Length: 130
Image 1: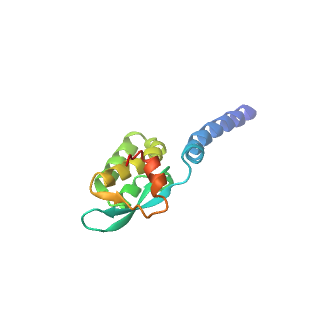
Image 2: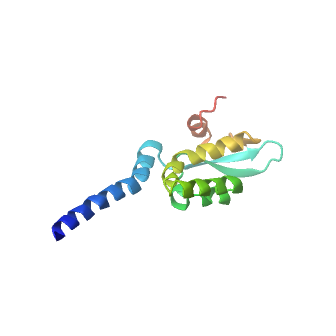
Image 3: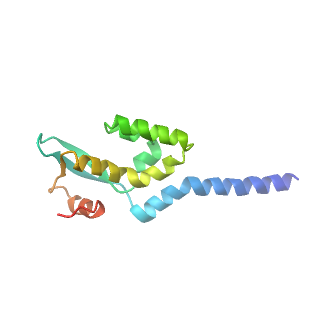
């Protein structure tokens, strides 16, 4: 009886480990590391960092990342989605958050800095046609 309980625990452990580790493995294999690119506001000339690729910071810190980046409404929305989905959205959003963030920045007056070393890679990854 004890042996059966240990086998059940072992199987459950590996199922949970698979679901917890799969976003990390998929992030590394498919999307690589998160890259930084400099953004410049077209009219104000202010510079800030933008990110593209798999969001490791979102995987670790979750819905706090949009709040830290100044997107309080988006952060609260992500918190609500995380609560409704019982945290499963925290495993999905790292794949899409940086792209969404960059799309919001680029459509609100920010431009990619063409002198940044990651400029060409950012254009390619964000599907921007010049």
